[in-house]
Length: 79
Image (cartoon, rainbow, N blue to C red; front, side, top):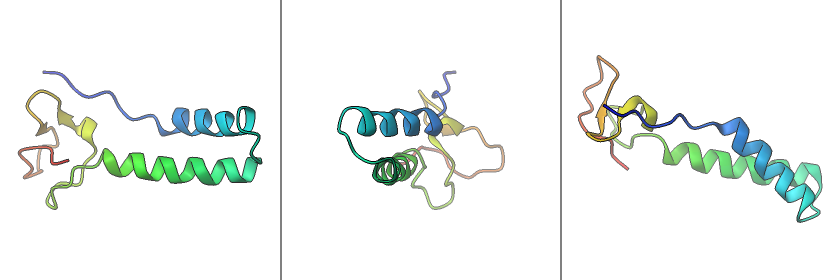
């Protein structure tokens, strides 16, 4: 049984902000806006699209795509 690695939004957020400030020369406020948009999009990618579920991908068993939340009717992770 393999579980997917949890999504670390803080690490990605910091990486994006520093990239745009250091490499692209963008202001801190603009870099924060860009990072917020990317984090929002990435979080949506990690949520099961099954209307009965809505749990994050790391709440599913990776190989079988089965939800590990006990009372959830989701049987497969829907992308």
